[in-house]
Image 1 (cartoon, rainbow, N blue to C red):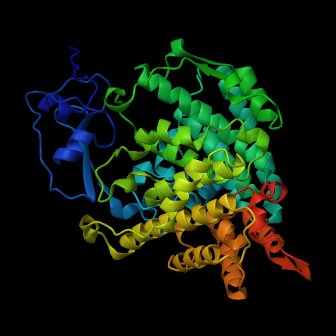
Image 2 (image 1 turned 180 degrees about the vertical axis):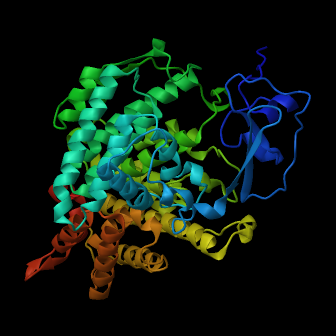
Image 3 (image 1 turned 120 degrees about the horizontal axis):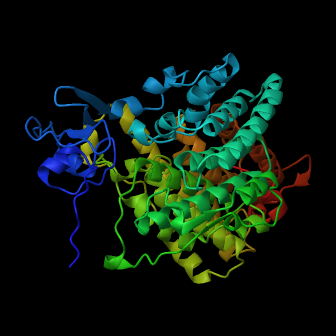
Length: 538
């Protein structure tokens, strides 16, 4: 019988209680579950101060966590983590971060860092959750680590400033080119193995930068596919029990990586620059259990969102490099559904998807089925019936302790799930009955349901950054002028909030679906028209 040994690098609280610590910061799972102060050493392998250390209980409050660090037996630092500071409209310390410890910034870079932290990061922060698992909370500790990551962030900040500001476009292009050069230089000359937090994060936000800046669909999906390969490597190494920097399991071809990113049209597959040994994960009760970090949660969530919305839009070449959603969501379901923190509702651990986690899974599968021309008819029929009966869920009683504005954020997440399910139902109906007309009563009922629930989400709400896909689906079948005016308005608001050029692409898409100046529109037939869809990058 295999006996699990307690790790000596865990928190002092678990060591004192003789428990196996999962080492997830800032508060480990054992301390969260037992409402203990989670006490961490300041130095690696620091011994437990047996004579002076005492385990302390804290008030059982699911909106407050306390993390404690001990430099020695007399020096104790306590840090309070409160859900209230994570609200998008109250970003807390991230709004004041214009410098990086140990890094001297020129005035231009300082300006772009501010634009990144106050503009770009909030625009990709849709959910109400703990600050530590938001895009800003993940980015802040990485900024001092990698010069390449900093340059990628500056490039994203410049792209954010270029929205409706022609004078900033040249700077945005210049900083993007500079970020790529710095990225390649750091990978060549540093000990980089292709699975670092900063590198995966860079690929994910570069994918967002491309779609926000109005680049081609191909460039967006190119970065996304690279991020996926890196996530696979991280996962397999963790399942095998190897550290992130153990090169025995993998090979990272730095030259091929540069070639892959520099030429988006290349036929090279992402797995040609990153090769790793697959590990038998087991299944059911025999599946290996591993601890997940806040970084894992964010990265998988961010990829899952962008992947789900791009499946219907990407080129055939890109589609062939993406995994099937029937595989992807099963492979990463443990990371997506295992809570890192004990929050009032479990899905608050999903910093991008939130309550809409299953909604995006369904929209990804519906898109995949639409692309595969009926190869999954049984799955299509099953999903069609499931989405037909979707309703908006209720928040648990534990949420009553939150402020009213925070409850509004959570309700918007539930509404987003409902909107996605109905949009997937509309798309699946068109896939299953390709000859059906736009004025079909069931399709029109889906459109009305989507728009009615969308109207319940406040204008310019943070969650608007993850609802373009259902708006696109519903907009294709909107028949009435009041519906079309509402869709135009919300689409334009998304553009202004996120600073994204894809709002213009969506408006052009709607004009083609609706028709103009005597030219009849395509209606919901446009959902199966590849040339029209591939012009979008949302």
